[in-house]
Image 1 (cartoon, rainbow, N blue to C red):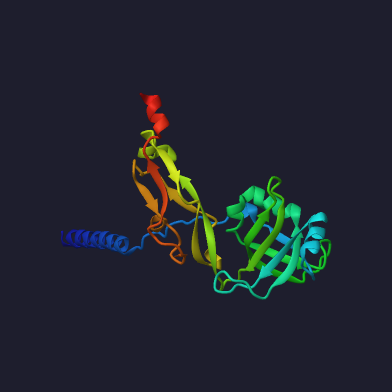
Image 2 (image 1 turned 90 degrees about the horizontal axis):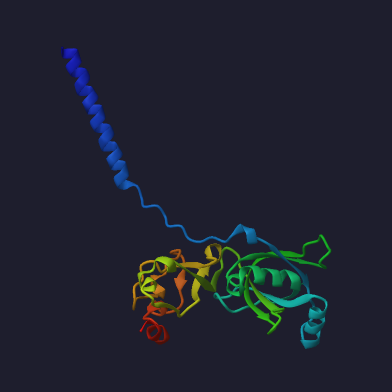
Length: 251
């Protein structure tokens, strides 16, 4: 009888410890880190370039005629200004393909490896550097790339980036379901970003927005290392009342 009591007490004590341990572990577990958008590896591509010795209108025209885009690679300086300029030319077909596939704003918020070679058929690499496209000028009408500015993006760099916004949840937004319309005020927002965590875009959740409600820049959920360059209270999007034309149709 004594043996059975000892065994039962030991078993209950062991169960109590296990129950307490599991509860304690659950209490101290940190919240899972939120998932932020990451660049789609499908568009990972090395941009090919050749060195260019001279600049000027005539040189640029000759480059474009030969299917090349006159470009510049700058050194990163305080997030925006360039220095240590290097003249290069890139392939027009490659830049056009990337801009068409990604969209202009997404192209300008994505990092690429850039390889400089003596010529495009050469296997010799003069320089390989990670870059962020800073500007791309497209010809009106044809959207052919006229020139591209790149800025070097080592891991230590802090870069000002206009990050594109992607709007989600329109189909379940209470305000939009009532017949109101979406007034998109900003399509990109500027952040100071460490080069290694530049987001390809920012998700904007509209699923809980009702008529008259809005989201401001400070409401956007981004990686904690990103620093907003613009005022937090600047509006991004608002659910507006029904259009006057829609109201007349309803009568």
